[in-house]
Image (cartoon, rainbow over all chains, first blue to last red; front, top):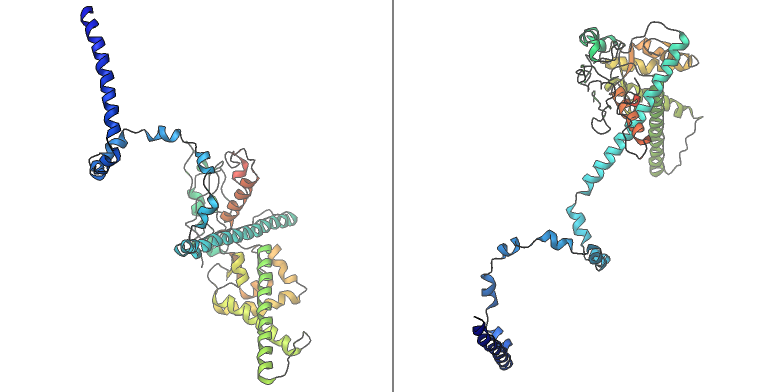
Length: 206
Length: 189
């Protein structure tokens, strides 16, 4: 075995050197560009299964190696923006609807705030007057027709289910008044009331 | 588990409206009606000047202007109350005129209310005292016309939302909601 190697190893080395020399000589003679010009690259690419090739590529790993900040530094954003046709963009956008939606929300919120402020003052003044007049009996909070069925509603509401004490008159759904019976329920203690915008104040009598 | 929420309402819709809401509504109406009247006078002056070439000037001492203004105010309030039960100012503040028993006010009540409305002023403003001290918050003109003024919107619910919004804005940037398990959850109760 060792003797065999002593003969074959030098021969293989010589054959290697001869082959390299031959290839060099051939390449020097050949016009590679002329050969490539004869190759139909499109046909070659058509035979390539790109999908299978991409499946083998780990894009996440590739992207992780990309320095995005450096990439963005090389981008001239101003030049990019100048190429955008803003007129065409605006034409495609229903700006009127956007403005109406946003201003409507703002106006509604402002109206809500103004009305709520007034109601707060109404209640405060009413409390002061009640105290000043030393009224023991609570005044009716709404006209009779709008309070129809209130007693029944209060009786129906078990004390254990709510705050434990019956509501004073007028703090129950009002019958006979449009929209008076389908208001959102009283949130239990500790539960936030409806958020602004979730249930905008509505003009039930509109 | 918390007990099921009872079907109770937080609304003040239909409750007697308070003095501040009514006063603000009246102030808005006064601004609107006076503004419209002034614009109308200006328009009339302009037209007269174009047609006749004479310049017309109006002033508060002019009896014609005073009569026109009073008539316009009667029309403004009377028409609004008769047709819809509320003026533009009342619509902004979310209050409306109803019959004393809560039913929708008939047009004639709206007209009567506007006619007797000045009485509350003429008695040194004492006619309005009823809004503060009367059990049903009815002023003198309400008692005569058989009307009352109520909230026509979900005033109490909106008040809760308003206070909740304020509480949310007042919270620290730490992010904890002030409305969770807090007394702030039930403002205005």
